[in-house]
Amino acid sequence: MSLAYPALPLFVAGLLAACSPALNWREARLPDAPVQLLFPCKPERTQRGVPLDGAIRSMTMLSCDADGLVFALTYARVDAAADRPAVLSAWQRVTLGNLSAAATAALPVPQALAGATAQGASVQGRRPDGRALAAELLWFAVGPWAFQASVLTQDAGPMPAAPAAAFWAGIRTP
Image (cartoon, rainbow, N blue to C red; front, top):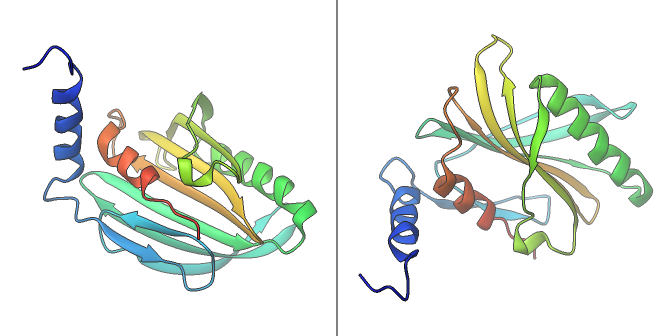
């Protein structure tokens, strides 16, 4: 092993973990919003009205479970640019409240969203049934769209770094 690259074995191990057989990465393009991303499994799509920031918003969610993690992207159209920051802030409060969580650390914003209004958080919380969970959450806006991307553990264990990092790195905007 070369001393010039002491982190190389850790990097390679992380890549191998992110590419495990349980994680079959594929591109997902949203038919109506300007974001594409990588999911480690085939996402299911659901849509429903959700009360948020004083209005019922039609939200679409793509989500899937793989290797003990839940990966999701939820989005809604917010036509008034002035309303987007308030919607993202309300969405963050509602999500953290639903998880009985407070942000424990900031989550770095993916490079593809560097120019967008974006905020991320790593949290420890609880499911509705009381079981502990770890989550990484990202709220961002692109054009007239507001988004929440998330990775949640299925149990109280720590968030595996490699699959979450691969999910965040796979977010793209045109």
